[in-house]
Length: 483
Image 1 (cartoon, rainbow, N blue to C red):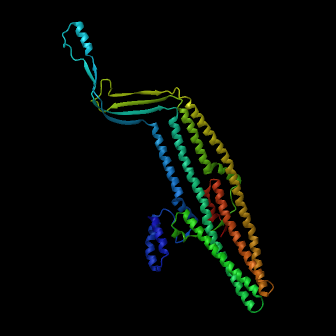
Image 2: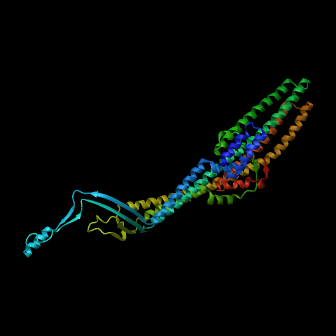
Image 3: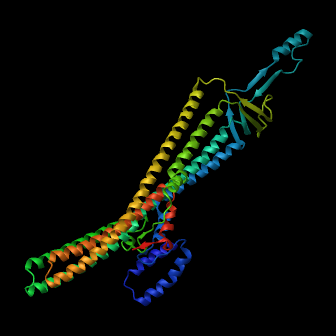
């Protein structure tokens, strides 16, 4: 309900209503949206990183699918607990046989009559009907396992491990999506800033073209000088349009990961600034964190527990199975003389020989357990290497940013000097255009290095299992440089 109100307001803000009408319509709806919407509400087109992260975590289908998988594993875990309890079932059936089952003892009666000299027919009929040709059976049966060699415990522990594995899959999905969203969100912010620089560059070369035309008219510079300035303006306009198109493409990509409608995605503006910080954990601490918190490693640990419980389950078949049982007849009318109304007792199943099948299954389960252990050892080394690689990538972007500060200062001064020299007739139009281009390029490189820092930081935190810490570094209180 709250999200629908927000969408309505987003669309309403883009329609040609008068200010008073918009205020009247949006006021009550905005209050309702603030009350009913569980997450942050953003103004038309304005989207902070925190708001984008909230939308991704709550709307992205991959995360929702992971939550459903975890929910299913939790229900399987709860179902496995039922193995500890008795199993009670009721059954009933109607049966028709070809003829009644009769126990005929009349020959014995004939022998007794002969031995005692009794007249024929003196003794009663010795034929007993044990079962009529139609009968009904109904009973309740209860079975309660007492000892299964640890199989029930193994099944329950395996179910718990599957829940942990599903939870770590969600964390891995969130980490991957967070890194991906950082690329898209701050990529949008980068293009928005680059568009500003492209416009500044265009304004600069347009001003230079105006001056060149005036100087050409006064015979101070040649037509070639003016044409060079004119070409620079055309090139600047082309680069500006190219950057705008790139901005629109990354807007669409960001809207996709946030599961926004295409119409909404076209109006997104990234409000959180590009940033750079230098206070990061030591490499050794990041590697230690990756060994403990990386979701891939934690999934492997869950698989290792699954393999161990699989081995314990197979071993359980080597032990006797002890169980209680009980039975109660519900329909007593058709019981035979040999059938009790109820029965209870204790039973034992002892495996003796299964053609070596059980031992081979145990060996196979043991091999699987060892396989997972080897995979875990390799994954630990690989993730430590990846963490170190991404750490150095972050450091490289910081160094790149610092080196560009001096470049920009020099390019700014060079543009001032060459512009003044051109006005005095001591420099060519090419010199001025090159100075403009050098300064604009240096500023874009600096922005790109900051953007690359964001991406590298997100990937570093992903490898070390701390993607949720990106918000800490992105918060205003920790920023050293912002753009």
